[in-house]
Image (cartoon, rainbow, N blue to C red; front, side, top):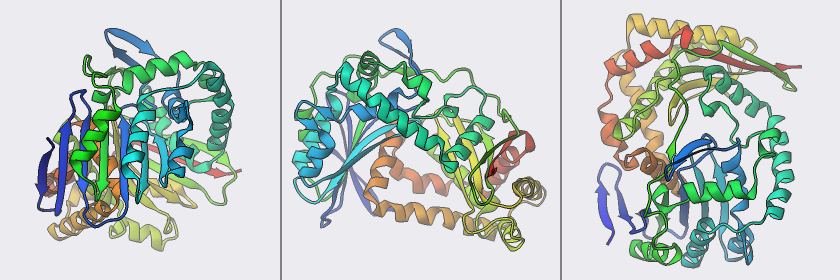
Length: 426
C-alpha cells in the first residue's frame, strides 16, 4: 500500500512505497493532465569508478556508466528507444556524474510504456560484438564533446578545483579509457548498481499510484537486489578545501573569451542537511552576484559581463562548489571583482531587505519548476539517493538565516578557494 503525503506549502501530494525487492517508488499525482512522465534512475554515474560490492573491491575505467547507458537500449526484440517511440512515447536517457536516468513521456499507453522501460533497464542484453561496435560510436561522441568550448571550459574548472576527486574526470571517459571497457565490465557494473535497492522510480501525471507499483512488481524480479546492500563508493581521500590550481586557460575557436570562476565548498552530508546546504549555496550565489547584486550591475555597466552571465551552486557526493561565468573581455578583472565583493560582504554584511529579496529570487524558481514533470522526478530521485524528500525544501529554506549565509560566503569567497577557467580565442 502506497503512503500518501501532502505538502501544503507546495499544494502537492506525493505517494511513496518501497517494494519488497528494495525499489523506492515516488508518484506525484496531477489529475486532469494529459502528459504522463516516468523516470527510472540508478544511483550510479561517471564518478563511480571505484567501489566495493558483496565484499569485493573493484576499479573500472572512466566512462563505464555512460557506455552502459548506451547499451541498455539493446533488447532481444530490438532497440528500446524505437519500440517506445512506436508506442507513442518520447524516450531518452542521460548519464551524470552521480546518476544515470532513463525516462519517457506520453499521453496514452502509459502502462505498456512503463512496463517496457522497467524491463529493458533491469535486464541487460548485449554481446561482445555489439559492445565493440558501440566503442566507435562513443569515441566519436567523445571527440565531438571535447571540441565544444563550453564542455572544455567546465572541465577546466573542475580540473582546477579538484586534485584527485573523480568529478574532475569526464563522464564519457576518454578514447584511451573506453578501450578497456568490455561486455564483462558492463555486466559487472549492471549487477552491482542496477539492483532495485540502488535505484528509484519516479512518476508524475494523472496516474493511479497503486497501478504504478503493481506494474513495477510484475516487471522487476521479486528478489533482485533485496539480498545484498548497495555498493559502497570510493572517491578517494577527502580533498583539501583549497583549489588545486588558481587558473586554467585554453585556446579554442571562440569569438570572445569564455570564463568560469569557481569557489570550492565543503562536501555535504547525507540527509536533510544535504538539501539545506544546497539551498544555502544557491542563496549565497544569488547574494554574491545575482542580477540584483551591486557587483553584477557594476560589471555590466562597465561592459565586463553581458546577459550571458550566470551563477549556480553545484553539489555531488564528496564535492561542492559555487560557479559563475559567461563572456568577458577581461575574465581576470571579473574574478577579482568577485573576491572584492566577498570581502565587502565580510565587512559590511547584508541588509535584511536585500536578504529577503534574494530569498524570494531563489525560492520562486524552485516553486515554478514543480510545473515540470521531469524536474520533479529527477529531484525526487536525487533526494532518494542523498537521504531526503525533495518536497521538504520550503521548510528547510525557511530556516536558512542571514548571518549563516554571510558566514558561508565569508568562508567560501577566498583566493585560496578559487579557480579561474578561461577559454580564449586562438
